[in-house]
Amino acid sequence: MNKFYIIANLKMNKSFEESKKYLKSLQNKVKSSKCKIVLCPSNISLAHFNKNIHEMELGIQDIDYRNEGQGTGSISASQIKDICDYVLIGHSERRETFSEDHKLLNKKLKSSWKNNLKTIFCVGENINIRNKGSKAVEDYIVKQLVNSL
Picture 1 (cartoon, rainbow, N blue to C red):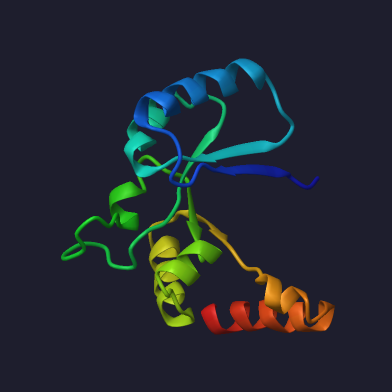
Picture 2: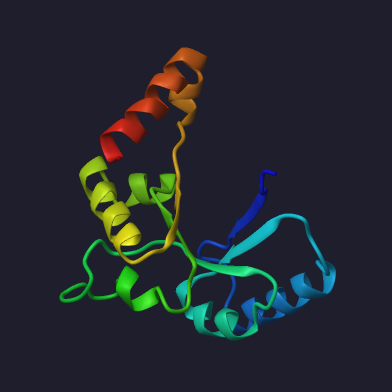
């Protein structure tokens, strides 16, 4: 039987207090689900979610490819593996805003796998590619997969 996932990427939204209220409200509304629910809050809320997430699972929105060392503001897979089960890698916003290329994404994937995180590898096209038709979209996504993996 296939498992279905609902993955909530909260992005850079919600203060710490708002995140706490959001989690409590979500738990009150979702008493049971046949889907696996993974919440990816901003980093400021990870510890709170870890202690209070209960039936749902926890993911982080991004990791650094390095396990330790210089990386001000970054979080490594080795630091987070004890509280998060999942990691988002390759989100379009990270690719565009931070110029994350295939080589960097490959390093992040390897770090995630080495630290036994369940990896959610994001692929997709922008509106310019989409407007070129389904073959262009397929080629673009295949290129992302082949070059990053």
